[in-house]
Amino acid sequence: MKILFDAMGGDNAPEANIRAAVTAINEVKADIVLIGKEQVINQKIKEIYNKNSVTEINERLKIVNAEEEITMEDTPTKAIKAKKDSSMVVGFNMLKNDEGDVFVSAGNSGALLAGATLIVGRIKGVDRPGLAGMLPAFESKFLLMDAGANTNCKPINILQFAQMAGIYLRNTYGIKKPKVGLLNNGTEESKGNDLMKESFVLLKENADKMGFEFYGNIEGRDAFSGVVDAVVTDGFTGNIFLKTTEGVGKMVKRNLKKEANKSIFSKISLIPALPIMKRFAKAMDYKEYGGAPFLGVKKPVVKAHGSSDEKLFVYTLKQAEQFAEAKSVDIITEEYRKMQAAEGSENAAEETIQTN
Image (cartoon, rainbow, N blue to C red; front, side, top):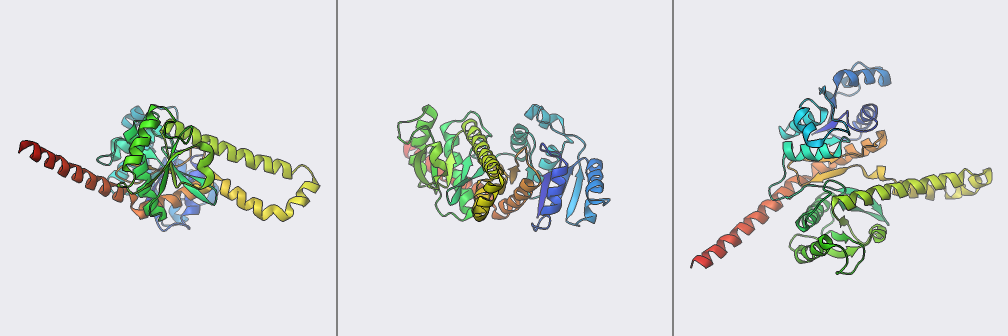
């Protein structure tokens, strides 16, 4: 297996990407291919590890040269079409041509979505791919979808997000019948805007045949209670929810650290509670949960956080291997093929009845 890794994507590229690849190669079974400016990568390898190339560190580490970069300021679709030798486009083409099994990037989210759909392609039957991000919950975790790929959605998109989230959770995490909640401003069926009201009806009607349990509407404060395995919403709301969650987690950790360092007496009194605090900090740390897979495209693609450091990249690379090994993309593709075949049979039967 090969993990294709955009070495130029992210706020801390390329150093954090390189360090993560060197660390992760001892924790994954796959080869890791760093895609980016070869001269720059080799220069960093020399500075950090005093080696002339990554293969001197580990023979399962490789570099593929790409001389261009897609920046956060670039217009997504234009950049994908114009910058053919960018690390992102080269990575997508390698994935499309079966020169790798999964592509990981912390680069421009819009460009990543554009590249995934334009170069790799959508699964037939999927209207819009979505970002599936994992978040902590009480004694568990839950999947948020869409976490930011689609700012404007239709009810069919929300339904497909739930279906793909269910398939992903079954095959990657072994949850037999995932429980899915619809993020809303109240739990009553009548709550929400038109999108949420119509999505509620679709989820309720189709949940059983699509292999998930519909919990109903769930408010933001209850999403972390552990009662659902997935929360679905449009990408605009989902991204705000995601960033708010990350911000609250950081704030809690900073306040705990500030209180602990107020005085020597505070430090001493907290010593017995340190193991509990460390476990709590670990559970609240979004870095523990890696990146967000793009569900709905023909090959495995994982979006890493733009602010990823070495630690978060390592988790994301491990998650990417797990995602590819679980073959969730193949299973989603097959589910949609069967669904379309069934719909085709039903339409043919109806036409026969009408003709007769």
